[in-house]
Image 1 (cartoon, rainbow, N blue to C red):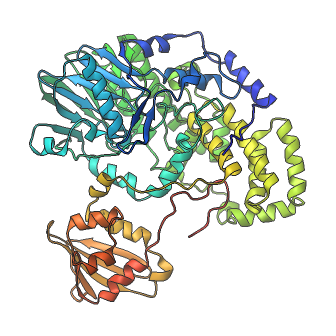
Image 2 (spheres, rainbow, N blue to C red):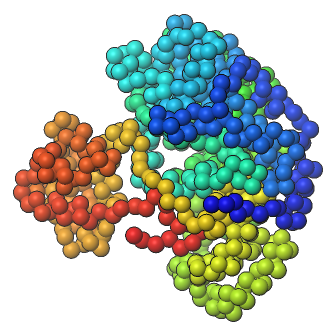
Length: 636
């Protein structure tokens, strides 16, 4: 399809030009740090999968060479986008190297006495392999002896099979270290709300947008996410103490557990031999999310701030370089202490100021409008700007964490659903044409927030109204052009694209290694989520399920339209008893087999009423991979 994007409107141009006077653009320290230690870049334009599909395009952001921001990009965001475009192999300090610009995250390589320790091998195996090959082109080709996952997000473990194999781990040649709870958190975050999160991530990261000044320019923490093979190898060693020291191939590492911060399972690492501190993703060169807009559990900024204070107190006077799993390092003890203190204070402010205002009775949107920025001089620090998280979204997340989504106004206890509300609102306002006429006038005045709010009502009242879709797309586009926050820009522009071109249906599905990591308990929890209660309410049943290879039993109950289970139990008089192996269950989870097929070919044995088992799987829902967002979503 042809590009339907439009230029910046005068109001957007004026807004973006105004940013040049608000922030210290003359400060070039970050550019110096982003270039420091550069060794070489990738020798080629692309990384590809075995089937030829492009996983990562190193030339996609060549349009960002100019220092002057185009009218369609916020100048502050343009600055970050250019910083994130520094790509290649970098030396952090003696025996610590970093691969940047191959993915959303960084891969760190620590040289041990005889081999390499790989920390956080990116999103996918192909780019991790390419990053290690770049390292080998400029450093001795020694074997990988250990892998460290700093936390439980996919951009920090997904490429592991690009640097090691399961056979090497099973044989004991390679150890894999992770914080306590890593596997449970890794699987649960990607499973229960997986289809919805993956769909919303398309908006957050701008993966469906063209790269360019009117499209996707960055993802805040990096340029974007690679599109290769996501893999997972379970840890051999879990870090479980608050502070735990290990020597790995001659390298002394002190691990600091920081659970419940940026990830439920996360840890910092300190290397005393080189006075080097790795803060995982607990501190970035920007504000992070208290609640990511793709969806997740709300994080705790209070504990996040606390652990950063603990890191500062314990390592601030003992560190000459600080590096992380995104962006570029910080050098110099004074700079490190200021940086950690700023990051600590940022999350403390978001938490405490929100609580202060909600205790005055302010609602989430009231608070977001009241707290327009961080306090000075923190708001002038580039490493505290709204590039990934935002003040507006984060304070609403804090409110949600403590108070829930309801703002205590009884009028909001039971509002009409979006479509019904929209139809009645537009009818009361005189109909779609009358509303659009007023909205166009507001658009010309640059009142884009209000136009987006009211024209959204027209679109939801009548999704086929072409004039409303066009005006809403134009409005979201201008809002995107003005955003300092990368994820907001990507969301606005993706919404505009879908209003103009429709929803692009893309294949969904879970990474095979993540499916194989599912325990039977997770599998049954997924069945419960997929169960259509309207179909199930009239079909109660009790089933026993046995996994002989795991020696595990489960008692399943379908009653009142819900499925529940107990591990380690069996019903005395079950309607049916099922026996199958975990490997066959994995094939079902991957969609390569269905349970009826397993029954037919003997992979699944049923004693008792087979019809009950067949009925259960006939009541399971199928989720869409690309549901509507800027127009009404529908079931089925």
